[in-house]
Image (cartoon, rainbow, N blue to C red; front, top):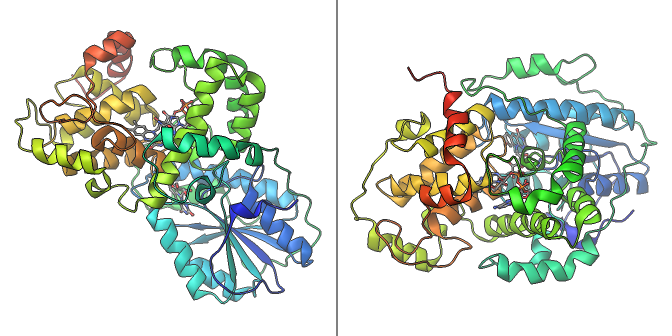
Length: 459
Ligand code: FAD
Ligand code: FO1
């Protein structure tokens, strides 16, 4: 099946030549529902060539710890098994990704390199380097967004309200079913060996990684199979109550799908198809699809068209102005980076949210806003607040290091995708939140008790 050409971007002007086709998997770490894999296989079949999937394991990635690497690698081990059953070898490259991928392409007389879309600066740099260094056709496919990022809008959007009509107009073209990859008829003799090779144990690989292990792995089960089990459980038991419960951290009303969506172990398009089929048109179904489609694609739009997505310079003009006017306001509390990280502020609700994240690798969406806004309120500058929020979010969240995170933090601290609100000390016109507002929404003491009770470092 042909992939809609609007998903495809040509990264250099080298024609596809004979030789194996390589899908350099990065953001979309799955076999099912993966447009980049589908396109790579189409190219290989047309040329009666083998198809190889390669993943370049970076020694460090945006502050990730063994918590995220373990989840990701265990998911990739399942990807390898599924691919090998399709006669598609999976190769794990280790070292600096652009260097490793360019070397692999050269060593194996590759005919075409397909990779997936990712708006983050580091990933753009990887793709640009490989497209420049290799003398092979490099092709990017947006397999993460339902409506491809560049197609949804050619520019930075002000907010959900400006992007929504553009996406909704294009959904009939793109929210379609997705074909499965087929058994590949052309076999690649695999000269290279990798830790994943026959018998290469995933546990040994995870153990061998030299990285920060102070942030332990979580109980969230990685991989496509778990993602689909979790999706079907949410569709059957959670979706119909989503609109009522999603702002109550005690109710478990969110889908919990973000870790699998972040690592691309689950396709947002698959989630949208199943949710629309089960509850399209209902208040809960529409509320969920708004978050999954509009909010999520708005984050990619933000990171793709605003290279300052993790800097104060990336805030809108009105926000930069109001922040500058209030940067010298007296802070009622000032917390150090250690107090934040150790959940040792004066605010029990904030500490509980921090403990939920440190302990479980997740934090309820409503509290993520409160959590980030309080960092702005209790830090001496927005720059310091942004740095602390990004550091903690990307260190402890399973779904961190994601456009949703940079956009969510910029929304909370810098008014991105939001409007100006009534002016007040420190926040200026940035939307304010406090625990009284939380108490109106949910049982704060119950939530705090649950997560502070679990902590072991307090007397
Ligand atoms: P559900 O409510 O079940 O939503 C389903 C999916 O829709 C989510 O998995 C996500 O892909 C998408 N979605 C939901 N809410 C948003 C949103 N506000 N913006 C963008 N997409 C959304 N999300 C991340 O994936 N990684 C992060 O690091 C991250 N950091 C955040 C930091 C802050 C300060 C804020 C305010 C939000 C952040 N978000 C982040 C967005 C959102 O909070 C999470 O995606 C959501 O809570 C994940 O839980 P869920 O899958 O149960 O969400
Ligand atoms: N992508 C890669 O291609 N190689 C990696 O080694 C890698 C590590 C990694 C660790 C944590 C994490 O959250 C993401 C990681 N990613 C890696 C990228 C990820 O797949 C996403 O592309 C981005 O994080 C989100 O856009």
